[in-house]
Length: 472
Image (cartoon, rainbow, N blue to C red; front, side, top):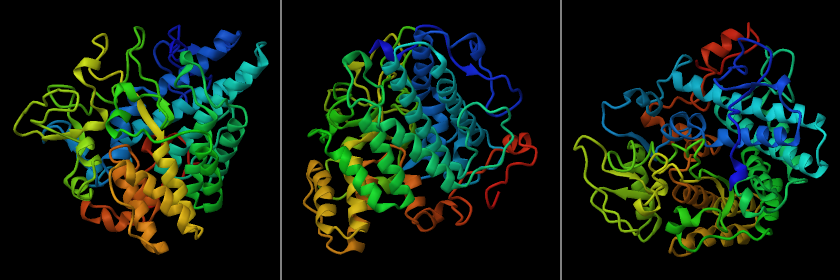
């Protein structure tokens, strides 16, 4: 897995413009004009994009503020006084000046910049043409992922296809951003390999590009393309891990269900990831944030094995033999079991749990995307069959839904419990039109909270080019 990590301290590649939200120079950065000379430079620059996937900005606190806490399946966690500012995301009181809103925005644009540096500079390097095309395809796939995050959270954003002379441009429409993402993913899928050798596990594949593309079509409500594209992925040899617990353990990484997964193996140079640490059992495995809500616990059907394999409880002994200790009586007493790293699997060279991979897209979700699209197209049989594949793994009987409306509700519910605590619940509620009802008791305001605000700094730096999202 060595190739997934950088061999030099190339933390960020920067452009020459100053004082822009896309141009935040980081310590240890390298000017692009002094780089991009060799094939090794091309590989390092591409690996810098992967490095961001496991970074604190992309996978720890800012990500959970935005994708986790606003939903009804996640609460702040820890104890009431610890990081109480997170409550603003639970009750929808964040503003244009809230740090987390700005932090996530900045982080995603830094990632887009890394992609654009590769896409703009690597074509000029004299190197093996096959490797060059593959690296460019990887950068396009990853740029599409970051743009999809920005689109779902902030709505239409500026499209930068390369390194422009100015970043002070208006926002593109959401439809234009969708088209840009689709173009990148289609182009990447045509080039990327279906699999890599062991040294390159974690690099994006054809299946990852097509899987993300099917999800993008789902959000666009382009049901036929979501159905057709997810069918392509289904035909590629992926399968459900028969053991739901194994799926999220170290031994289950890059298994048959892995479509898009971030390699977070502990590295002597860059450490691991804090994705699991910030959510781990407080004072035992981590910080104790972003924990399951009572609403999530209530959502599981009787007999669903995923309930106890998603919710980790104080006082229990895990399947791996760890006793989850009781902690601060003011703290929460349940945690996200999907990010739990058994003591025997921890790498003490890095922070606890830091080697836990991040599962961005699993085959179970591909099946549910296919089921939802099939149902909207009137294909009840296929929708039912793929929904039931997911339910069978959870040791549940087949769905009793028979109508299109009933299946729609059943599929949405299955997404909630199958993908619980994985960052999809809030954006799922928004895209399906359920947010105004489900999240109203938490303070969600229809016509406003479907999107987060564009940060005030970005509005000011745009010199009047940006419009703010409604309600802020």
